[in-house]
Length: 337
Image 1 (cartoon, helix red, strand yellow):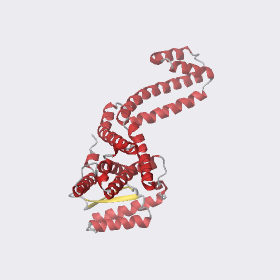
Image 2 (cartoon, rainbow, N blue to C red):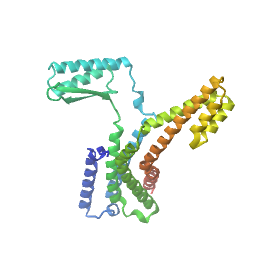
Image 3 (cartoon, rainbow, N blue to C red):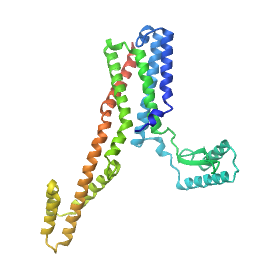
Image 4 (spheres, rainbow, N blue to C red):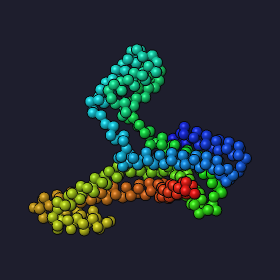
């Protein structure tokens, strides 16, 4: 089970949001869902909180897809390899100073590391974590990793979850009685769908990878995908080089299904012994086809398992999109009327 999400420090966001909204309720002496109806000021405040929470939740989506589709500014933060080597040399020198006892405080080490990265010019893409060393070892340890100027996607996912909890409370307090108007019903309805599917998604996210791991046998889903793509490409390239009659034989064998291997052996045995080049070509294509078939079968099994715990996104993502559009319409209507 993936438990990291439930041990996140961002849980405090949801706790503070709940405490703040309870305080608002206590101050206004109103019931849940009618605060907005009783006070114009509270309606604006709770609406603003809900909007801010939604924008922060959408921040995770932006952070995720800006990397997936390669338009993140982080991809332009490149430095020559020699600078990375220079940075490693400087960090190694700091490690030697630690071993010699020349650096006595953590703040001193962090300052020296920061200056080294800055002087080399890699401070935007390299991050060094300074930690207390184990007993009997160096006083401090340095862990070098990649810097994430916009934060790690995993941390954004944590924020996405807990800020969405705060969003739920804000929407509940802001417009819980708004079902009597068409736009209010749309806003509350899609908010409910997004929240419910999100909760389902969180628990599937926690347990789903374990289900997938249990189904994996010789290959992981990533390995099966790579092999499937590789075998498909090689088979297509080899097929293009084959003469039309051999290509027809290959297609006929591939379509036979269960008795494919037996038919392939019969066809190979029937080919003239002197036709060595064509024989090897067909044999290679048949072997590639068999490997592709086995990998394809494994990949489909794993992919169906993955789809099983990712299917909630088919509802969650369109609902979130429609909710965002409805919120924009809601804000425009407020500004106009």
